[in-house]
Amino acid sequence: MKIIHLSPSDDITHILDNLDEPATIYLAEGTYRAKLWVKADNVKIIGAGRETTKITFDDAAKKPHADGREYNTFRTYTLCFTGSGCSVENLTVENSNAHPEEVGQCVALSVNAKDFVAKNVDLRSTQDTLFTSPFPDDLVIRYSGLTDDPTYYDGFIPKKQLCLEGSAVQIYKNCRIYGSVDFIFGCAEAYFDGCELISVADARNSGYVAAPAHSLKQERGYTFINCTFAGGGAKDGTVYLARPWRDFGKCDFIDCELGGHISPLLFDKWNDTYRDKTCRFSYSGLKSSSPLSPVPWSKELKDEERKAVLDRYELVAKRLKV
Image 1 (cartoon, rainbow, N blue to C red):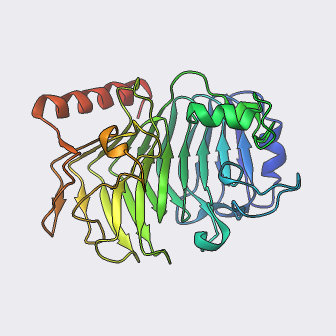
Image 2 (cartoon, one colour):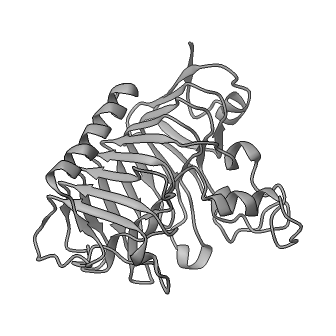
């Protein structure tokens, strides 16, 4: 495996754009202002520490793109992976936009790949901080220009980012993820182990941590284990743990600690939809300083169901060597 040592004075964009083999990239302390796309398989990016090593950029959904359109959510990432078997450790990935109600969504990390691991990483943004591919099927059709409808976006998103056939498994361990609205979203089977999910203030005075869009065929969706949901400026009772971005979005919350900013209802159905009848939201062992009144369409896991979720995570973590 190739070993590369970089500092902020190096052209990290050029190096990653031309990388076509497995590599471990060590980033020295400092701020790397760059928009990065990792295309090779089995690439590890390791920082000197998440307090001292930062990759940052500032694209936002309403920003005009060179192609004459707006960036849209999925082109705003600071760091994107499409190579399988990649990982990041000991650094911060940031989209520095602070007012999503004005500039739109601002993705920090976009993982359009299989078998991805993040450890001891800070992800910082506001709305749509972390995208966990695959895309919902309807968006693959919309963005690939497979129809004659001129309102659809032919070639809007590179095929390597858009089309991830099959499923993806991702693990986020001991990470801090900051955001306000739908700040973890997508269709991956993703596990958040010992993470801190920090809800920052939003001028709209409502927030949502997860926005899953899983297919009904997916047995596992987002799983949060021993996580802390902390307030980072969000007002008490204004943030929901999850709302379904697509009909069958799935989330399990196990042994998590909830701050006062989390609504006692826990979950929202997503605007004027019927997704409360189709989504799959479950919980077990939640700890909160105030009484909880979970919406009736959510489910408390039975012992055997809880065990099945944890056993699955153990198998995934072993395979990905976490």
